[in-house]
Length: 201
Image (cartoon, rainbow, N blue to C red; front, side, top):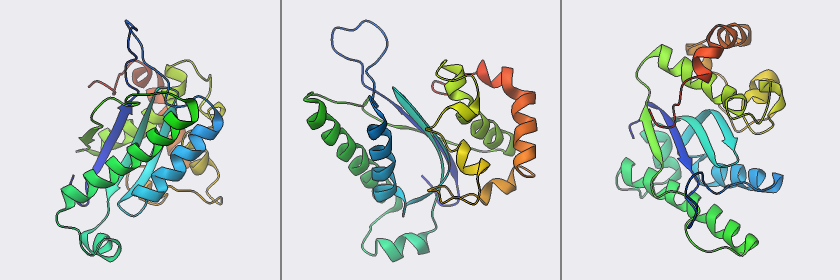
């Protein structure tokens, strides 16, 4: 992962043994979502700027940008390479959450599939679509009928800009002309995005 580059990051729950299809949930109750975001902020808040996210019962999405080398060196003065630092922090984050989850629910084995996916975002339209797709994801998977109904996404942070958030909420102005532009584009691209599957593309 490179400085100044935006990435779509996503990861799924592991496929349970003896289950032919589908996957196990990573979030079983509200406290799981809260703890996940708490650990995300702890391990990755000083590594990446987070622009958007969506947590679903068996997978999640983050739209992030890697912080500058100067900022990283202030927090991690001894880090060797950017790649190793980011990989280590993500690994620590996933491990911390999975260990706590396994202990709480008395389960064993890997909670997540082995590797998290990270795709660089190269164009303005791609950034816009990823951002919109995240917030439409609960509708796509039939957990909500409106973006306002799903609690575990960054949509509410943009709707209520005066409230504190883990999101960096100024960078989106490089891609949208404001919240009204986001709403307009979401309506225009709604059906197209609901028919996309950016978890496998």
